Image (cartoon, rainbow, N blue to C red; front, top):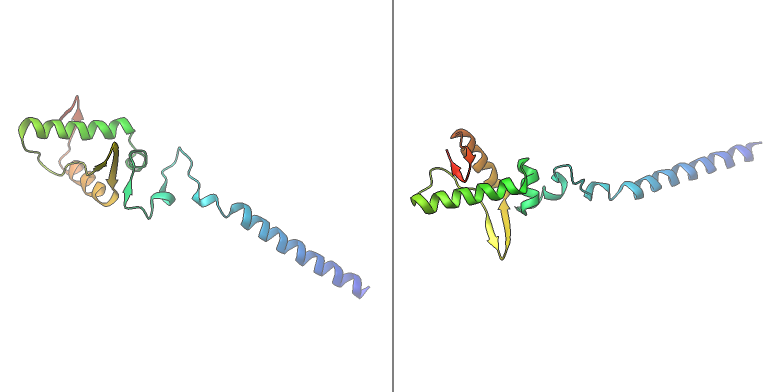
Length: 124
């Protein structure tokens, strides 16, 4: 009888440990995956530069809206020779635009404080 109880305890322990290890293995890579409908906070958390898709998600904008902001600011600077405030922070490597997350926060603050409006390639 005692031998039977020990066998049940050992079998339960083995089953429990196997269950825990199996769950760890299947869930271990989940935090690296990014759902396209969510902000990639885990993926971009340690990145200094983000691509346009990550930037649009980070700012809750579309990629087209981000590009329109860049083009609008560039056209206004070209037209008048000056730009009041902080311009949208980006660098261009080849055909790819890269954005500094820390400077984006500064830009958002400045654009919000000045109540900047981007409409028809003009800022108001």
